[in-house]
Length: 373
Image 1 (cartoon, one colour):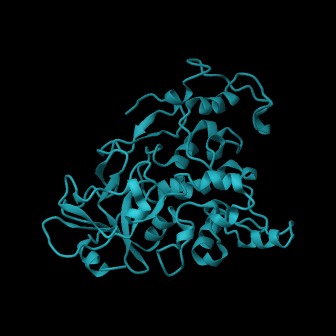
Image 2 (spheres, rainbow, N blue to C red):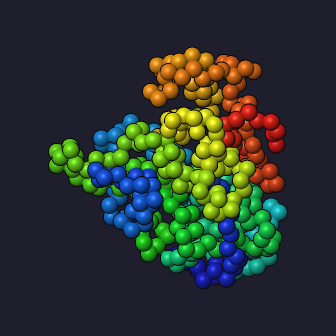
Image 3 (cartoon, rainbow, N blue to C red):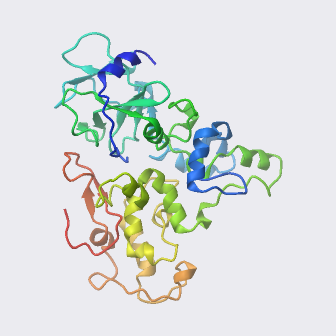
């Protein structure tokens, strides 16, 4: 791990309650709740096998998922792992910090100070937007860098939640459950006594949603097809699926409990969707996977999303809808009945209005939008 003691003293000890760049289920016949699944991810890592073990039987899903942003959201902080996503060496703009690379590894320090730079161990994020750099400090804390790099923009921004730190601070130390949750939103599982996942568990893999796979694989290999069944997410009610996704994309309960920004329905997508009349009147049929294929990257094809809207908002009953809504005549939009649904009812909003980060996300609170940012 290198000179972690040096990093411990260089990193601010302040704790934060805000959420950074945000950026399952069981394998036995008895399917656990999302909360139980989270406990399993912490206390039973031997039951997890890694996504590669799923490939022989689920090749199509594996081929798509293991190349997705979800699957690539945890990297070693090395040139070999990051490739073109690696940050540039040298001074970090609007900061006293500097990034240096030696033998393919990266270190961070204050530009005015000489000597060995404490190493950075991991990069959190797929590179689609920003990547935040962290180093575990023992088994219960993690140092998070104050500046995050956005590879496609080739720009540095202050990591969300670090805005109030002094300009010469290297970042924050996250501890306890907060630190574990940080890592577990970017990895499948971690040991009970460590914040460092095995490499086969880097990224959000199959078992992050479907639960540990060892019992399922053992049963299938033995021809016991009535045992070790994995959870079938498509059979779950919408609120349960949304809670699963909301473990990292945050639910209404998270926003209340952590006193987070209540109008951030674009940053906290599961929370935003839960506010929507569409969800509330869908009779448990409108979930995150109604619009998003969990095995691939989020589509940018608005026509595909509009088709989902029009599947219900056609003005007439339809057998193409989920069964509970087939006999309902849901009125079409009086302004634009067949197109432009997303831009009007789910407009893009900046990640954080007061931040310089030039990233926008679709507002998942589906509604008639009166005022826009």
